[in-house]
Amino acid sequence: MAAVLNFTTIGVYVAMVGDGGDWTYAQGFWMTVCSAGMSSVCAILLALNSWVMHFFGKGNNLALSPVRRAFVIRLMLFVIWLAMYVTLRF
Image 1 (cartoon, one colour):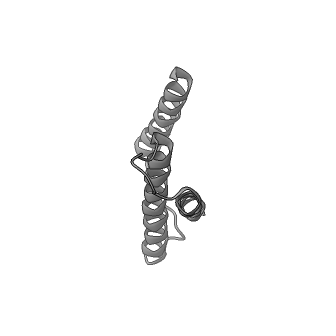
Image 2 (tube, one colour):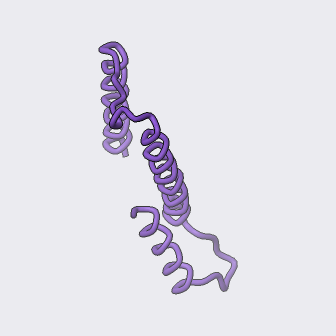
């Protein structure tokens, strides 16, 4: 859904502003393009994962060991900390 909204925003912006001069698009435009691309990749991988997990027959239960579960939780906390650090830094 986010990728669709991002690509729609890009299309509307290009249609309204166009490219009729010697100027270039701003950083925000290219960040939106990158965001749309990454959202699309994540959505495709999530759909692929859902389709592949269906064939395992375990009811989508990954059965993580305690060590692996702790690793996933620590990794998620690190990503959240990194996002907050970058957001608050600027």
